[in-house]
Image (cartoon, rainbow, N blue to C red):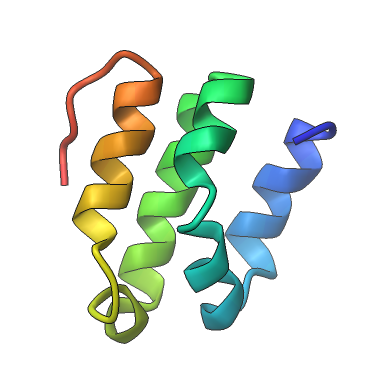
Length: 76
């Protein structure tokens, strides 16, 4: 979260399915801390990239909480 551009680049290009799973544990805290719509969009795109992994946990709920942290409605 200290280097937002690098974090975004990492999420877009290098994040694995397992890392996506672990990010789900902190995505709402991350969104609250950095207030970045782009980070949340990257996270949502990871759900599309790894749909099987997204089915193993409450992906929609994670998106909802992250978007709520931005003060926005969820669009899953």
